[in-house]
Length: 404
Image (cartoon, rainbow, N blue to C red):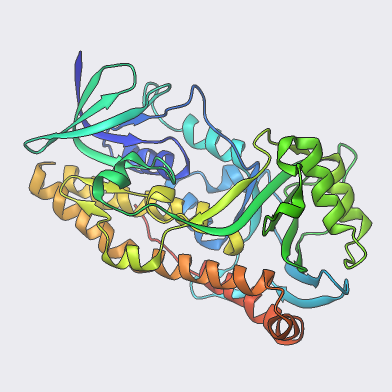
């Protein structure tokens, strides 16, 4: 059985949902294929910086997210070894296009908000692309259930193991050598944390405590895995104890209230994830788009999490891609034909390429400095670099992807 679709988007994550919603706002229909049976909200929450809220406002859902999440006033980076604040950065300053706005947003709420704005039937669940073939200008999408979809446009938002990125010839993402785990703690009576991001840096790890609302707190922990970790990967309980042992060790000065967040939190059955990124050189040389095919989100620019920009950049991608692709279908003199689509995707790739390269590179460098055990880097980090690194995070968020 073969179906015919103008625009097929692979993957109903942030990039896929944002692209589909942006196209819908432009009056263009798309089909969103999601391999899982439901929306996947892995990761619990993510830092949603100023640039992401500009994208959400362009999609018409910014206020629906704001009302459920705290607005941060500052970021405080602590030395894990001394417990002292190495840097405090105000998050209330003015950016190039207005005041900064940073919140920690629950991933499931954001995904569901985007989904609810889409017309019924836009998302097709349990639909996995296993192979892509060409027939003239049409892409034949072979599905896991044996069916075939004939797509006039294919957008890959299918994550770090993207089938679409592989078809475009992009190399596999690289392992950073670090892993991450995370969780979400609920405090029905209130948690007592202020409107601030708390970071604990050094001793070979980086950990963050970020209140999402008055009653929920998200935490994350990244580290360099080693044989000394033992059986930490075997279960949630063992991973929790591994993290607590690291943070409460003799060499660390982590406050009790931060440890309590981890102790009481819910954690994913996927106890940790290796952190991967796409080489900036691959993004310089590689094909982000070719003809009527392109990639967005983690399929395009997987990055390590130190800037908190992976999800934010995916939302930017969605707005820019919907703007360019929408113009190919509804713009004056355009008919959605192959030539119009090719030009639109080339425009999208040109606009997004160097933004992605900057983010991937900066995230890797910040992560290396924050988690390095080198004596010289550690000294500079605690005396000078922590404030600079925090400002880099804010500067990277001072970006506007524009309107639809």
